[in-house]
Length: 340
Image (cartoon, rainbow, N blue to C red; front, top):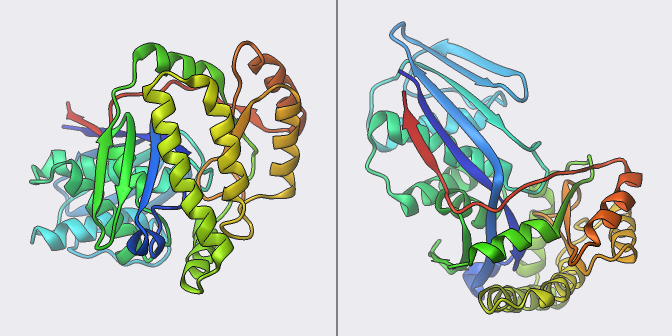
């Protein structure tokens, strides 16, 4: 028997950063995101030899030990170990014997929510295998708790919910980890036009999102007015993006993205870089109407809205920066699990 799962990565279209505590606890946050056809995958193969084997196929990392109820968090595949530890603890299960394989379609630190999406995919495989009584909100909340509380990784809340629910969602974030996911009914032609008009560019750089997010958190705690005001504007950007998509006003998307670009950079130092600034200007000069850093910033992916037929000129322009344009489609499904 093999238990399989996959969870989609996401593009944060508007409101990014307002899902991070303490801003979301104090003021409330909102984000509009959408999942894309890039995934985190997990396979679990049960064993009966009192052994646990963990393998990341994309990164070439491996861990093996005798079965035990708590695996040591020692810097080697700690995310996978923490998921297993939490499941055993929360459901008071005996030590399990299995091998687990993972693969992610995008590099870590690329800004598409890879780490959180991987946690959701692995949790989903365990839920399928062990028949755990966890629904969508439960899985997303547990994924968040594992990352932020057990592993103490700084970050927001949107990625876990996007990967679990899938599709286009307007999400609201409040104190006490309260999250409301509002699915948007986006017409098929709008989804097709968006995926056709958005150029997703990987800069071939990565970053530690935790470091940038920690700066953002400090700005809120220190009541940095520029940073806090920028986050309030990004909340408004999320509402504007929702209205544009639901009303089929795609001609406004470039301007909405451009507005977010201006405010995103004011949240914390390190979000934008000299490379990002150069790439952004070149893309706009080539005809893009607006763009956005994906994720916390500092490296990874950036995407541009390119209406009509300007995507070809933008892609040609971006080719001079040594990165890679990644094709994708928007998806409607979130976490999926099955067994064979």
